[in-house]
Length: 343
View 1 (cartoon, helix red, strand yellow):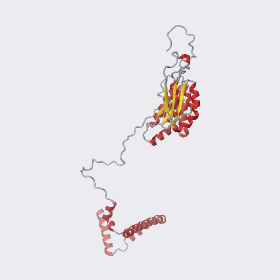
View 2 (spheres, helix red, strand yellow):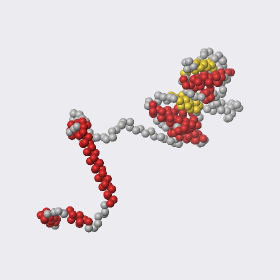
View 3 (cartoon, rainbow, N blue to C red):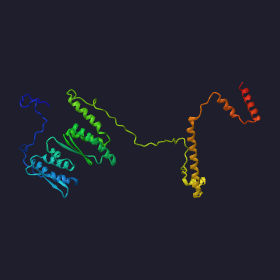
View 4 (cartoon, rainbow, N blue to C red):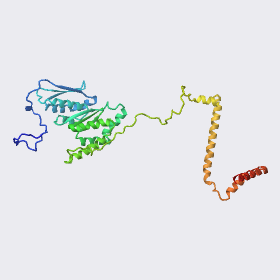
């Protein structure tokens, strides 16, 4: 908000960044040393023990610059940070707390110590309890990484954050605005919304920010609108029978006949083992002969000659071959009678 005071302010020039966070120094703490000791502790998994033991001297030296003491307990498997009498920055202990949290979540030391800088925050997103099915959880977590880590790299470039997917958590480091986007993408991915949709949206927003005319306008008209398909969760049967046409009967339907029942009805059940084998062999032989005949007819189809002009009359003659005189006379009489009824 611009000042309404008419007095000139020669020190207030346009090149001053009023939102810049100045570094907190010892002289800025007017109240002096902290009256109470604050401490935070966190557990770490067994597989991190060797790495933390090797990297602990570097962590100790880094925290000593901010006058924070740290302890590594390998028996309990815990890391502890606490303030000292020389600590002047009240926010330093909170940054140290975030540091040990990130180290416990497999973030490398070289990356984790950046949390002590101003303007860098962290967010540990718990995704383990968002999906019940284990297989589905693994597939959706893999979507965050993408093929060859390409999706994760795209998210890091667009949000300006460091992202690490480890077990049931996603650790992110960066600016507050970027962390908000990362959380939205990760939780959306666990809710079955593919990260590529959010990546497209972030790319469009990034391009719109470069245009000075559209910076202060509403961007909804430029952003893609992805409609969520709400499919019916109720499973329908393959064949739906119309029950309205059937008459109601209080009795249940008759049970289906078992294999033994069918054998008793056909009489096969009472046959001896040799008779059953003979019957089965005979049935197979009959089926084999049928198949052989069908194949033979199929092969001979190509060799059947086409019908010619006089073939139809020959067929008729062949049809009435072997007739007696009385049968022929009766047939002709029937033909004559039909012709008379037509006229």
